[in-house]
Each structure stands twice: as structure tokens, then as C-alpha cells.
View: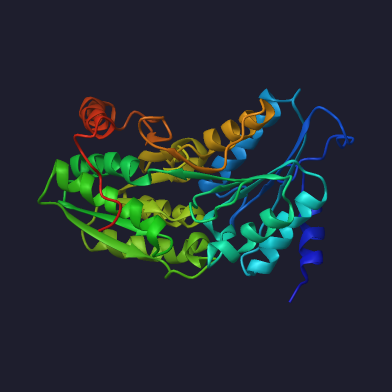
Length: 349
């Protein structure tokens, strides 16, 4: 098994599209910030979750160039341990990065008060950390960037119910845990609200292990989705990260429909599968990453939970491709009800 030192060397050797060349390092006492970002498995190029975080860090480079003097991105490896994740975070803070963002709940570990991020935060008290998708790590120098995935998933559930011709739709989750359960719960609730007689088939590619192999199991996703299409589902929503490309491939092969996740996947995937995507549940990880860094550059940092929901624009739905334009008035009616509290979306089934 490779040592973490070898892993870091590999990460440092990645091409600039994945790991941009560092700017001149900030001298002690300088005015700018150095920002580090540690990806979840799948990394840049997953067309979904990690790419959304990457888009946020790209905005940091473009819009905060005067306040941020260096950005460093580190990739993850699918078979790594909690110790590897801790070493990645510690590497960044030991190298003098003022801000470190951990992309994904895997950096919390189990239990979260003893996991990779908690350990790094305790040892790097002057570093301001953020973790995406975890509320369990609590420390004075850790901000928790979490999302109301169930709210956005409700809206795309309405889309699925309105677009199905067979009365049967599906959901493919990368991992069977509480986070992905929020996507499934919201989706099922949206389908039920719009068309209660619709059958929803829910399947997962892996259990609750961490790191979860389901998020990169593209072949397994293609097989699972293919079986669901063959059994009568004609719209499938995935919350499976990079593995979701397999869902799109299965839909393409059967001239069926699919719903993307995290990013507006109609814009991120290749032309060979773009036509199957009728909408995506957009989770603004890019906004969360950018706003966190921007706040620190302005002297604003607060630890604890920051929730990105429909009201704040943190989740929503995509209209690229024009496939759901006629449904927008209905979706907006539901969106307003969720925001004003007259409609409560469940977070578990």
C-alpha cells in the first residue's frame, strides 16, 4: 500500500487542470490569504459534486485575486483511510494555508469528534476550516456548510411525476446513508405530491461504508439503472456523484429520461448523453465554497452550521435544454410553499 507521502507526491504532480500551479507564497505578515481545498473521491472531472466545489474555487481565483494569493487543490484516492484524509488536511495547514476546505462528509470520519477534520482543526488552531456536507464536526475554527437537499429533490420529483409516461420512476443513490437519504426522501415526496399513484423504485449502489465506493461505481450505476428502465421506470434521478454518468448511459441506450444532481449536468456532461437529462437538482456547492472564502477575506468567519436551502438559493432545479419550461409555474408554486413553511419536505423515508 502506498504511503501518504507517496499520495501527496502524486497529488502535487497532477496536471494544472486538476492542481493549478501555485502563485508566489504569501510571506509571513502579508495581506492575502492562501486557500487549500481537499477533494472527495472522484475529484475534479466527476461532472457533479466535486466539480461544483471546483467551480467555487475557480470563482475564488477569478474574483478574489487581490485578496487570495494562492490556491492549492489536492486530490483523493478511492482506497485511502481516515489517516490519509487527516494527513492531507494537516499538510495544507502545516504549509501555511490560512483557509482549508474539506469537500465531503468523509472528512468528518466516525465519530466526527475524533475524525480527520476534528484532529486537524485541533492541531491547527489558526487555520479556518470548512467542511461540505457535514454538521457533526464542531470546533471554534470549523464552519459546516450543509444543504437542504430534500427541498431541491422535491422539485425534481415533481418533474419526474409530470414527465413519466409509464407511471413508474426511479432513484439511484451512491451510498445508503442519511445524506443520500435526504435526496431520496425529498424526491419521493415530490413525486407523491404531484402524482400520488406513481411508483418510485429506490436503489443504492453501496451501503454506509466510508469512503463509499458507490460514488465512483459507474458500471454498477449503469447496470442498476438499466434494470430499472427495463422494469418500467422511464425517469431516473441519481444522487451518485461520478457514478451517475452510468445512469445517463443507461437512459441513452433505452431512449429514456434522467435527472442530474449537484451541478447543472446538462451543461457538464458530453453530447452523447446530454439529451437524456431533463433537469438537474442543483446544489450550490460552488456558492458555498466561494462565499466562505469571500467572508474570510472580509474578516468574517463564524464557526458552526450554515445551511443552504431554497430560500437562500442554495438548492434548486436547472432548466437548461428547455425540457421543463412548461413546468416552471408549478415548480415555482411548490418552491414558494416550501420557503414560506406551508409545505414541509421530509428528510427521511
